[in-house]
Amino acid sequence: MDNTVEAEIQQLHLAGMETALPNLPPVQLDAFEGPLDILLHLIRKQKMDVFDIPMATITSQYLNIIDSNKNLDVDVAGEYLVMASTLMQLKSRMLLPRQEVDEEGNEIDPRDALVAQLIAYEHYRMLAEELDEFPRMQRDVFKRSIFPESDNVERPLPEADLDALLSAFGQVLKRMKSEVLHRVILETMTVRQQIQFVTESLQQGSMSFHELLHDHQNREALVTTFLAILELWRQHVIQVIQTHHHACITLMLSISTQADKARI
Amino acid sequence: MLTRNIEALILASDEPLSFDKLRALLEPVESSDVREALNTLENHYADRGIQLKKIANGWQFRTAPACANIVEQLWQTRPPRLSRSILETLAIIAYQQPTTRAEIEVLRGIKVSSSIIAGLLERSWVKVLGRKDVPGRPHLYGTSKQFLSDFGLNSLQDLPDSAQLMDINETQQEALELPEPSQTTEYNNHD
Picture 1: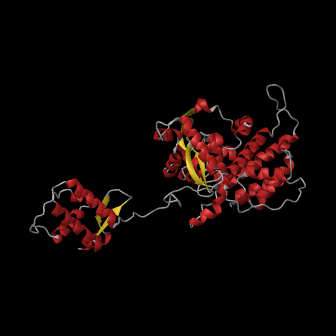
Picture 2: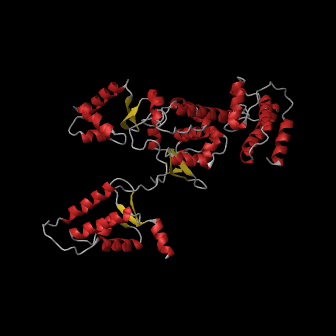
Picture 3: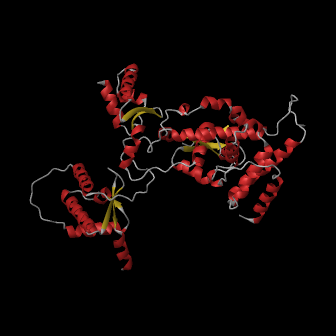
């Protein structure tokens, strides 16, 4: 913590020291959620009346706590110091004869604003505790779900399985609706040719399965190309990716294949 | 049969199933019959390992809180405890919504770090409702349906102690020194 902050605490501390203090156990600032939390801790622990806070006692106790936490983070030190000076100011105003009156001539207690703040904060502190006790999803109660552990775990793109690829192929065949004839035909197309066709098509970048088979209008071409895809996949030349069930299947050259090409 | 159908629909649905959705699915069954069947089911499950709960205005089966210690063993990881700063910030947003970060800071008496707000947004418990029409146009935060669902609430009315909160509203307004929200607030809902 830097020297100016420390000096400032020291100064405030000296100014607030004239009251004898009951010995309070040392506290760590980390355990508190800010200045209001500390003040409430002091007030409740000593069973003080929140509407009639003994400013002198509270001020010196507060300063003691701040002072004993020398390695206070400068970022949060500001708020604790602002509260320290507020307390100092209130303490001195309490010593003066009351001069402040509201519109109806009633005396204004200088502590009113701080009391309001403390009560409001204490209320939310309590509500927060109650909120924490509500049966919480994934902690106290569970529901039926596919991935119960978490929604924010990063999952790698899942690889499509063979079944998904086969059923996608089934859909393509179904769409063709061409009549099936039992006819012996010459093999006009080879798997080797189609392997070349697929790798060349994928040079441009990834393609969806349906896109790749789009231009093949007959069953033989479709089957041969499909066999080529299976062969390339088996040899890890291409990657087959499906983001979720029934999603479009994407084909792309494996990273190692792309690297090979780059080297050539 | 109606009871059985409702039971099956609620179990099969991924999200809490609203009364209107149920009734629409069960056409032409009378609303009163659906209500009665839900009541029967709710009572039927009252003492079981799973319970029928009305969550975020929909019906859902959930495991009983009493079984939590056993059920959690199904998974390796346990959800992390929520820090007091997160819980306090969430509580303030839940009761004061729509509210800004500056207003939360006044109530807590300490800076609200960006990571707290970011954490609440990431869990989808809190969402940005719009911007407040004051200099700087700060974000207005409110709680989401996910918040209701994860805390097992049917609506914001189910939050604890709201009656008592009304009593101290005046004190709070004093503490916040805020003008009436209705005059200054402008919603740009982008949900």
